Length: 156
Image (cartoon, rainbow, N blue to C red):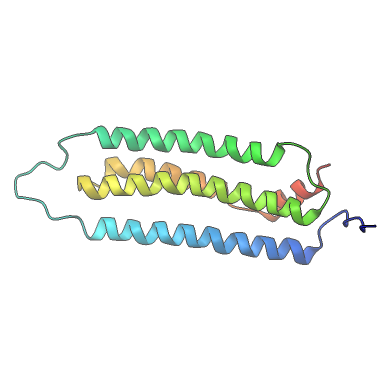
């Protein structure tokens, strides 16, 4: 007969899960920051007299992608956390929380990277950086917290 899993995760398991998520989120943010620095400090060479932006379609796509991923990230995360019955095993619940955070962060990271590529290709920083900043702010709101994880673990 299989022993029943513990009702709650130990503080060490919660700490370990949060540390792992902090490292992963930090790596995502560090990669974005390095790419943003590269994009801003090393613009592509341009012929003299050529206007900075001839076609705004990429900027519009960037704004649209940022908006869609921003909304989708919150919906997908909520869906991942509330779908089906919650597992009785706290380690499986921690895994579900971890997956929801990483999926939400990755969705917004894609929008930030696309916006930064548009900025790089266009050569103008400020109109194109707004969608990147909006998606980066959404990533900030998806960062894991001890309170959110413990609340998710306490739900029946």
